[in-house]
Amino acid sequence: MTVLAVALAGSPANAGVRPQADPVAGSPGIGDDYYPDYGNGGYDVSHYDVRLRYWPDTDRLTGTTTILARATTDLTQFNLDFALQVSSVRVNGWLTPFTRQGAHELVVKPTRPVVANQQLTIVVQYSGTSSQVQVNGFTAWNRTADGALAVGEPEIAWWWYPSNDHPLDKATFDISVQVPDGIQVVSNGVLTSPPQPGPLGWSRWSWRSTKPMATYLAFLAIGHYEIRTDTSQYGQPVINAYAQNLGELSDAAHASVERTSEIIDWGSKIFGPYPFEARGGVVTAAGDLGYALEDQTRPVYDGRFWRRGSNAYVVVHENAHQWFGDSVSVAAWRHMWLNEGFASYAEWLWSEDQGEGTAQELFDFNYATRPADDPFWQVKPGDPGAQNPFHSAVYVRGAMALHQLRLTVGDDAFFRILRQWTAGHQYGNATIEQFQTLAESVSGQDLDGLFTTWLFTPGRPDLGGVSTLRRSVAPVEPKSWSKIKDAHEALHAHH
Image (cartoon, rainbow, N blue to C red):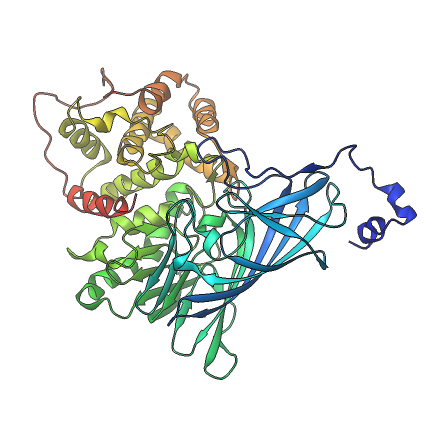
């Protein structure tokens, strides 16, 4: 930092820095085909320090976010994704001009040159009423009766902290929120200390995530929560939080989410070691969220998942995402199958483990009960389109594709593929094409036909001789299917 600061001041140390001939403006998008203006170019973030104050009675938020980043090229300006009102931006301590552009772009124009590989400390001060701020006609910030939920995919960060908002740029996080006494704040990772008293009548909750995280996976749940803490069999903190107004859903929610640690231990045997520093879950009041999301270390669930009693399948789904989606994140949003197909197949594996129906029985039932002319078969799980990344086909046909892979390569190779995948791309990003390459390498087979048919070809695939399905006999519904279906209907409620 010292050398660069001197160099930027125009001293002879400049001779040691070889700038590009033409500094460029960092691009307003990171290059995603589905969402061209998501993320930004020209820099790479390593850490976010988000400090907020929140008034539940008015939904007002004030904040200071400090971003530690490295310039990847010589820059004249760069963008942050953000929608709230900004009062100031500083880059390496210098007050810096900024403008707004497009729906959610904050354009930062440093008064001193930014050179490739320079370390940047960007401090943004801001405020707003997040639930009243719309981008492209919607807000992902969810005001509740006693607080708020900042939970969403693929966009949520715009309403509470400025960022390079794309899974390609992961970072570690410190998230600290001051709220009135009696209000709880739950976020990712580990609570660094008990809530600290602030100004009279206020307390500050501080959470830390030490493993790289995609921006959409950072979350806030603010309100009246019962917080349960424990330690897993392997020494990790387990933090579960339940909305205090769950009512008659409370027992079923507890009976399901309190199995999180057991489910993670089960997943660790199949997918490889659990990749994060903490585990748990958050349950909101029924209808406050409407769905569930795999927020890193601590998925968030709407209470209505348990309106028909306990259901561990949604807990399995969201915690499988800790490996598939959170640790190994998509390189672009087209690759959602790597998240949703895998988390859905984890439910089938859990069903198998619990004796509630084998993966084969679940495959057969889904194939037989979805006629060939069902529009379900027209969505390509490997490229569902920007309007359909959460289509049920990405989940269910996606799970079916994995089952076909398992049948084709055999159990030994299939589970080796999964473990090598999570190990080889841990804390990184990946593509479907990379997964196919790994599957072919491990199995020694050419799998192009299988991937093309199941992921990239509309229409119900012809099973040929691969499946044990007897077409003349309708398969019996596996015991697990009603709960899996129930969980998936709720998962798709908001999409």
